[in-house]
Length: 178
Image (cartoon, rainbow, N blue to C red; front, top):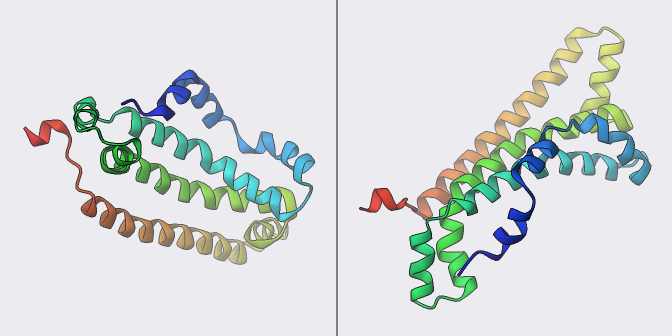
């Protein structure tokens, strides 16, 4: 029983994903403005593009590194695809999936502020642009500190959820079980 998503994912080479990951979102912003206009949808698209490739690459790596012996065992017990996904694939890939999500949280904050700065000039990004252009460094620093505290707090909260999930689905690599 092979994970079906890996067949489609393997067709797209790793270097292609690396290129898409390293492409600056600022180069894509004009395309987003054409597609979505200057609306909040453009900011959401900026956040999605900032997060998508990090999460996708980590998910792909997590599913790719699943122990083949565990998949063979599931096949020998005639486990359904859903059961194999739930009991073998997800617990094995969970550490990398969660790592991608944790990295995505930080990139989401960057994408949201960046989108606000370039597309709408509203929200925290708009305040950063406003205070920066007025040389109001005290207020600019306060907004930046607020963004950083919110981002760090979100990551801290997600790490608590991550610890709970990893403890709940105690996955041990094959080497640890021998």
